[in-house]
Image (cartoon, rainbow, N blue to C red; front, side):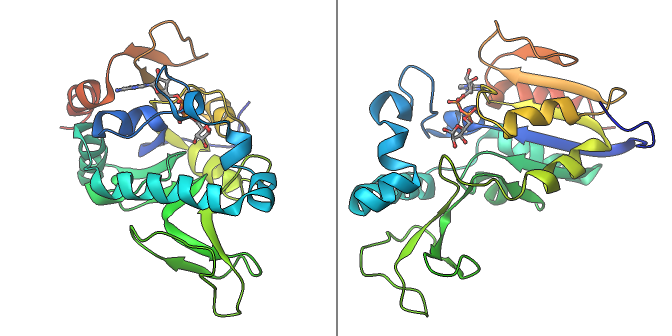
Length: 234
Ligand code: APR
Protein backbone atom coordinates (compact mmCIF):
# COMPACT_ATOMS: atom_id res chain seq x y z
CA UNK A 1 0.00 0.00 0.00
CA UNK A 2 1.13 3.59 -0.43
CA UNK A 3 2.59 5.49 2.46
CA UNK A 4 -0.12 7.95 3.53
CA UNK A 5 2.48 10.73 3.19
CA UNK A 6 2.71 10.35 -0.60
CA UNK A 7 0.64 13.03 -2.26
CA UNK A 8 -0.04 12.45 -5.93
CA UNK A 9 0.98 14.90 -8.65
CA UNK A 10 -2.11 15.46 -10.80
CA UNK A 11 -0.02 16.40 -13.82
CA UNK A 12 2.37 13.45 -13.63
CA UNK A 13 1.76 10.43 -15.86
CA UNK A 14 3.68 7.20 -15.52
CA UNK A 15 3.40 4.63 -18.30
CA UNK A 16 4.39 0.99 -17.79
CA UNK A 17 4.76 -0.66 -21.18
CA UNK A 18 5.37 -4.17 -22.44
CA UNK A 19 5.89 -6.02 -25.70
CA UNK A 20 2.25 -5.56 -26.76
CA UNK A 21 2.89 -1.85 -27.30
CA UNK A 22 5.58 -2.66 -29.89
CA UNK A 23 3.57 -5.48 -31.50
CA UNK A 24 1.76 -3.11 -33.93
CA UNK A 25 5.26 -1.99 -35.02
CA UNK A 26 5.92 -5.57 -36.07
CA UNK A 27 8.07 -6.68 -33.12
CA UNK A 28 7.31 -10.04 -31.49
CA UNK A 29 5.83 -10.34 -28.04
CA UNK A 30 6.95 -13.19 -25.76
CA UNK A 31 3.90 -15.13 -24.63
CA UNK A 32 1.35 -14.62 -27.39
CA UNK A 33 0.78 -17.49 -29.84
CA UNK A 34 3.64 -16.43 -32.12
CA UNK A 35 5.70 -15.02 -29.26
CA UNK A 36 9.45 -15.43 -28.87
CA UNK A 37 9.12 -17.89 -26.02
CA UNK A 38 7.07 -20.12 -28.31
CA UNK A 39 10.08 -20.37 -30.65
CA UNK A 40 12.95 -20.23 -28.17
CA UNK A 41 13.47 -21.43 -24.60
CA UNK A 42 14.52 -18.33 -22.66
CA UNK A 43 16.96 -20.56 -20.72
CA UNK A 44 18.82 -21.10 -24.01
CA UNK A 45 19.10 -17.46 -25.16
CA UNK A 46 18.36 -15.08 -22.27
CA UNK A 47 20.16 -16.35 -19.17
CA UNK A 48 23.68 -16.17 -17.68
CA UNK A 49 23.91 -19.95 -18.05
CA UNK A 50 23.14 -19.76 -21.77
CA UNK A 51 25.83 -17.08 -22.12
CA UNK A 52 28.34 -19.36 -20.43
CA UNK A 53 27.38 -22.43 -22.48
CA UNK A 54 26.63 -20.99 -25.93
CA UNK A 55 27.54 -17.28 -26.22
CA UNK A 56 27.33 -17.40 -30.02
CA UNK A 57 23.67 -18.54 -29.87
CA UNK A 58 22.88 -15.76 -27.38
CA UNK A 59 24.63 -13.13 -29.52
CA UNK A 60 22.75 -14.27 -32.64
CA UNK A 61 19.38 -14.13 -30.80
CA UNK A 62 19.98 -10.52 -29.79
CA UNK A 63 21.65 -9.51 -33.08
CA UNK A 64 18.47 -10.63 -34.89
CA UNK A 65 16.18 -8.76 -32.45
CA UNK A 66 18.39 -5.65 -32.62
CA UNK A 67 18.19 -5.57 -36.43
CA UNK A 68 14.38 -6.03 -36.35
CA UNK A 69 14.00 -3.28 -33.73
CA UNK A 70 16.12 -0.91 -35.82
CA UNK A 71 13.91 -1.60 -38.87
CA UNK A 72 10.69 -1.02 -36.90
CA UNK A 73 9.03 2.37 -36.54
CA UNK A 74 7.13 3.78 -33.54
CA UNK A 75 3.36 3.27 -33.86
CA UNK A 76 0.45 5.55 -32.94
CA UNK A 77 0.58 4.20 -29.40
CA UNK A 78 4.18 5.33 -28.88
CA UNK A 79 3.42 8.67 -30.51
CA UNK A 80 0.36 9.27 -28.31
CA UNK A 81 2.44 8.62 -25.19
CA UNK A 82 5.15 11.01 -26.41
CA UNK A 83 2.54 13.70 -27.20
CA UNK A 84 1.39 13.66 -23.54
CA UNK A 85 4.61 15.52 -22.70
CA UNK A 86 3.05 18.70 -24.09
CA UNK A 87 0.78 18.86 -21.03
CA UNK A 88 2.10 16.40 -18.45
CA UNK A 89 5.28 15.35 -16.74
CA UNK A 90 5.65 11.88 -18.28
CA UNK A 91 7.88 9.02 -17.15
CA UNK A 92 7.89 5.86 -19.25
CA UNK A 93 8.87 2.67 -17.47
CA UNK A 94 9.30 0.02 -20.13
CA UNK A 95 10.05 -3.71 -20.11
CA UNK A 96 10.83 -3.34 -23.81
CA UNK A 97 14.39 -3.29 -25.04
CA UNK A 98 13.64 -1.52 -28.31
CA UNK A 99 14.04 2.28 -28.58
CA UNK A 100 10.63 3.01 -30.09
CA UNK A 101 9.58 5.20 -27.15
CA UNK A 102 12.64 7.39 -27.63
CA UNK A 103 12.21 7.50 -31.39
CA UNK A 104 8.56 8.54 -30.89
CA UNK A 105 9.80 11.50 -28.82
CA UNK A 106 9.48 10.35 -25.20
CA UNK A 107 12.25 12.02 -23.22
CA UNK A 108 12.23 10.15 -19.92
CA UNK A 109 12.37 6.37 -20.45
CA UNK A 110 13.44 3.82 -17.84
CA UNK A 111 14.41 0.51 -19.47
CA UNK A 112 13.89 -2.08 -16.73
CA UNK A 113 15.19 -4.94 -18.88
CA UNK A 114 17.97 -3.15 -20.76
CA UNK A 115 18.41 -1.87 -24.31
CA UNK A 116 19.18 -3.66 -27.57
CA UNK A 117 21.06 -0.62 -28.91
CA UNK A 118 23.71 -0.93 -26.21
CA UNK A 119 26.50 -3.40 -25.47
CA UNK A 120 28.47 -3.72 -22.25
CA UNK A 121 31.72 -5.15 -20.97
CA UNK A 122 31.56 -8.60 -19.37
CA UNK A 123 34.36 -7.51 -17.00
CA UNK A 124 33.14 -4.05 -15.93
CA UNK A 125 29.39 -3.49 -16.21
CA UNK A 126 29.85 0.26 -15.95
CA UNK A 127 31.38 0.15 -19.46
CA UNK A 128 28.32 0.50 -21.70
CA UNK A 129 28.58 1.33 -25.42
CA UNK A 130 25.98 2.65 -27.88
CA UNK A 131 26.02 0.25 -30.85
CA UNK A 132 22.79 1.18 -32.64
CA UNK A 133 21.80 -1.71 -34.95
CA UNK A 134 25.30 -3.22 -35.14
CA UNK A 135 25.70 -6.91 -34.27
CA UNK A 136 27.96 -8.04 -31.40
CA UNK A 137 30.44 -10.77 -32.37
CA UNK A 138 32.62 -13.06 -30.31
CA UNK A 139 35.95 -11.21 -30.16
CA UNK A 140 34.34 -7.76 -29.87
CA UNK A 141 36.04 -6.41 -26.73
CA UNK A 142 35.60 -3.50 -24.37
CA UNK A 143 38.47 -1.06 -23.70
CA UNK A 144 39.70 -3.42 -20.98
CA UNK A 145 39.92 -6.31 -23.44
CA UNK A 146 36.87 -8.28 -22.27
CA UNK A 147 34.11 -9.68 -24.46
CA UNK A 148 31.11 -7.43 -25.06
CA UNK A 149 27.59 -8.73 -24.21
CA UNK A 150 24.10 -7.40 -24.88
CA UNK A 151 23.11 -4.67 -22.36
CA UNK A 152 20.05 -6.73 -21.42
CA UNK A 153 18.80 -7.99 -18.05
CA UNK A 154 18.69 -11.77 -18.42
CA UNK A 155 16.48 -14.07 -16.39
CA UNK A 156 18.02 -14.46 -12.96
CA UNK A 157 19.85 -11.14 -13.15
CA UNK A 158 19.01 -8.16 -10.94
CA UNK A 159 16.57 -5.53 -12.29
CA UNK A 160 18.67 -2.64 -11.02
CA UNK A 161 16.20 0.12 -11.97
CA UNK A 162 13.11 -1.31 -10.24
CA UNK A 163 13.38 0.98 -7.18
CA UNK A 164 13.86 4.03 -9.39
CA UNK A 165 10.76 2.95 -11.33
CA UNK A 166 8.70 2.38 -8.18
CA UNK A 167 9.71 5.79 -6.81
CA UNK A 168 8.59 7.47 -10.03
CA UNK A 169 5.27 5.60 -10.00
CA UNK A 170 4.34 6.20 -6.36
CA UNK A 171 3.26 9.86 -6.80
CA UNK A 172 1.87 9.66 -10.35
CA UNK A 173 -1.62 11.12 -10.71
CA UNK A 174 -2.26 8.91 -13.75
CA UNK A 175 -0.88 5.42 -14.39
CA UNK A 176 -1.20 3.74 -17.77
CA UNK A 177 -0.14 0.08 -18.04
CA UNK A 178 -0.12 -1.07 -21.66
CA UNK A 179 0.69 -4.24 -23.60
CA UNK A 180 2.07 -6.42 -20.84
CA UNK A 181 0.92 -9.82 -19.57
CA UNK A 182 2.10 -8.81 -16.06
CA UNK A 183 3.69 -12.23 -15.73
CA UNK A 184 7.28 -11.19 -15.01
CA UNK A 185 8.37 -9.78 -11.64
CA UNK A 186 9.49 -7.40 -10.32
CA UNK A 187 8.06 -5.33 -13.22
CA UNK A 188 4.57 -6.81 -12.77
CA UNK A 189 4.61 -5.73 -9.11
CA UNK A 190 4.67 -2.06 -10.13
CA UNK A 191 0.86 -2.02 -10.47
CA UNK A 192 0.53 -2.35 -6.69
CA UNK A 193 2.78 0.70 -6.19
CA UNK A 194 0.29 3.02 -7.94
CA UNK A 195 -1.39 5.44 -5.56
CA UNK A 196 -4.94 4.57 -4.49
CA UNK A 197 -6.15 7.99 -5.66
CA UNK A 198 -4.39 7.90 -9.02
CA UNK A 199 -6.36 7.34 -12.24
CA UNK A 200 -5.23 3.87 -13.35
CA UNK A 201 -5.75 2.26 -16.75
CA UNK A 202 -4.70 -1.13 -18.14
CA UNK A 203 -4.79 -1.35 -21.95
CA UNK A 204 -4.32 -4.80 -23.49
CA UNK A 205 -5.61 -7.01 -26.29
CA UNK A 206 -6.56 -9.66 -23.73
CA UNK A 207 -10.00 -8.73 -22.41
CA UNK A 208 -10.03 -11.47 -19.77
CA UNK A 209 -7.29 -9.98 -17.62
CA UNK A 210 -8.34 -8.06 -14.51
CA UNK A 211 -5.95 -5.75 -12.69
CA UNK A 212 -6.92 -4.70 -9.15
CA UNK A 213 -7.78 -0.98 -9.05
CA UNK A 214 -7.28 -0.44 -12.79
CA UNK A 215 -9.86 0.37 -15.43
CA UNK A 216 -9.29 -2.35 -18.07
CA UNK A 217 -9.64 -1.22 -21.69
CA UNK A 218 -9.48 -4.04 -24.22
CA UNK A 219 -7.94 -3.32 -27.61
CA UNK A 220 -4.79 -2.73 -29.59
CA UNK A 221 -2.45 -0.11 -28.15
CA UNK A 222 -2.04 1.73 -31.44
CA UNK A 223 -5.84 2.17 -31.65
CA UNK A 224 -6.81 2.67 -28.00
CA UNK A 225 -4.04 5.03 -26.86
CA UNK A 226 -4.58 7.89 -29.36
CA UNK A 227 -8.31 7.94 -28.48
CA UNK A 228 -7.81 7.54 -24.72
CA UNK A 229 -4.95 10.02 -24.34
CA UNK A 230 -6.77 12.64 -26.44
CA UNK A 231 -9.40 12.76 -23.67
CA UNK A 232 -6.63 13.63 -21.18
CA UNK A 233 -5.44 16.74 -22.96
CA UNK A 234 -7.21 20.07 -22.90
N1 APR B 1 -2.03 -3.97 -28.11
C1 APR B 1 -2.11 -4.14 -26.76
N2 APR B 1 -1.72 -5.26 -26.13
C2 APR B 1 -1.21 -6.25 -26.91
C3 APR B 1 -1.08 -6.16 -28.31
C4 APR B 1 -1.52 -4.95 -28.91
N3 APR B 1 -1.46 -4.76 -30.24
N4 APR B 1 -0.53 -7.32 -28.77
C5 APR B 1 -0.31 -8.10 -27.70
N5 APR B 1 -0.73 -7.48 -26.58
C6 APR B 1 -0.63 -7.92 -25.19
C7 APR B 1 -0.89 -9.39 -24.94
O1 APR B 1 -2.28 -9.62 -24.72
C8 APR B 1 -0.09 -9.62 -23.66
O2 APR B 1 -0.85 -9.31 -22.50
O3 APR B 1 0.71 -7.71 -24.80
C9 APR B 1 1.07 -8.62 -23.77
C10 APR B 1 2.40 -9.27 -24.14
O4 APR B 1 2.78 -10.07 -23.05
P1 APR B 1 4.24 -10.73 -23.06
O5 APR B 1 4.49 -11.36 -24.37
O6 APR B 1 4.34 -11.56 -21.81
O7 APR B 1 5.22 -9.47 -22.98
P2 APR B 1 5.66 -8.67 -21.69
O8 APR B 1 4.54 -8.57 -20.69
O9 APR B 1 6.26 -7.40 -22.15
O10 APR B 1 6.83 -9.60 -21.09
C11 APR B 1 7.51 -9.09 -19.97
O11 APR B 1 9.03 -10.98 -20.05
O12 APR B 1 10.40 -12.45 -21.13
C12 APR B 1 10.36 -11.27 -20.44
O13 APR B 1 12.02 -9.67 -20.67
C13 APR B 1 10.86 -10.14 -21.26
O14 APR B 1 10.27 -7.82 -21.01
C14 APR B 1 9.75 -9.12 -21.20
C15 APR B 1 8.94 -9.57 -20.01
